[in-house]
Image (cartoon, rainbow, N blue to C red; front, side):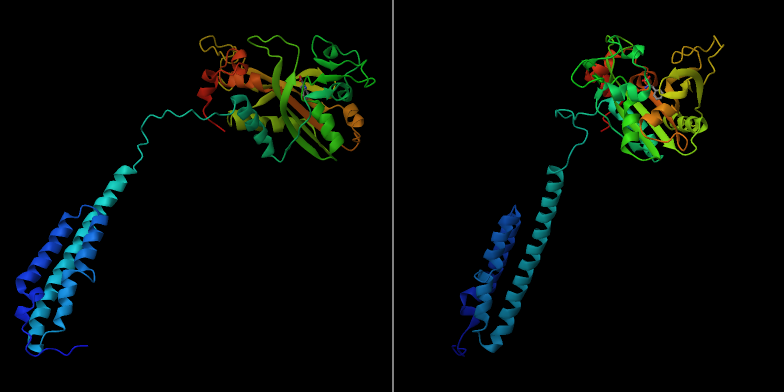
Length: 374
Ligand code: PHE
């Protein structure tokens, strides 16, 4: 370390001349002002405030000055460095603000721009509607049950008390996969003609109490036209418990139509016959459009119910004790009710679909108005 030189004259130290210090300061200020990016500013910062910058070097010279000269030079250099640091900080925040504003603009998303992406697919309205109906029952504690679409004739007919000569078994109604003369003995194999075989399957599978709904596909030998399709969907409901009566059936159905069509809906029963229910009934629901007000009122005709006031829903009844016996359930202890109806028909009147073919042809122009429910 060298001792301070008593004869040292600060004026003669080039770097500490006032005009030199001013020049260094002004160069630094100009470099900061010229920096047009944060990177450029960083370079200018290193060059003008770093340990090798002219002002830092000048500062180091002060230590070598005689005491009487130190204060003056120190003050000048200190003020210059202060001004430089202040300008640096100001430019830094200016450039940061510019960057933030630019990022906001560059990364902004215009949600109103048209897009050319392939639209997302959605499930078919039949599927979503069928699930909505099933959900009504699931919320009441029912379980979803399933059965095969290629079904043993025994489940489709025999277990359900269809006699061997029942007309529904004949070829004109039923798709046979394998006739009764096949190697399975008495029972052939069919495409199920209704979801009711799931009643028998569920009773064989479970111990009562049984509360199930089965949405599914069924088949009948119909030509595809405006009101028929050989493949369609049904929802089956079965409840077997102690003490169930027709009042429970009616109450359950009223709840279903109220959930689907509104609180002021109701159902009515008309006598009918099914081999697997006794007594059996046809279930109608109040027309949800005219609420029955079109009946006998020619001024207010209703297209939905053809001014009849009621819409046919499906078949129902108390489970025939013979079915309970065939499935190993004691009819002295248990009783049950069942209900089955077609989803296509319900979707048709609920959405004014005039031609059943629209539902099966897969044209998105039909499904799009139902929305993108998934
Ligand atoms: N399975 C019957 C049909 O397809 C409907 C039905 C279900 C009737 C349950 C009574 C009970 O027509």
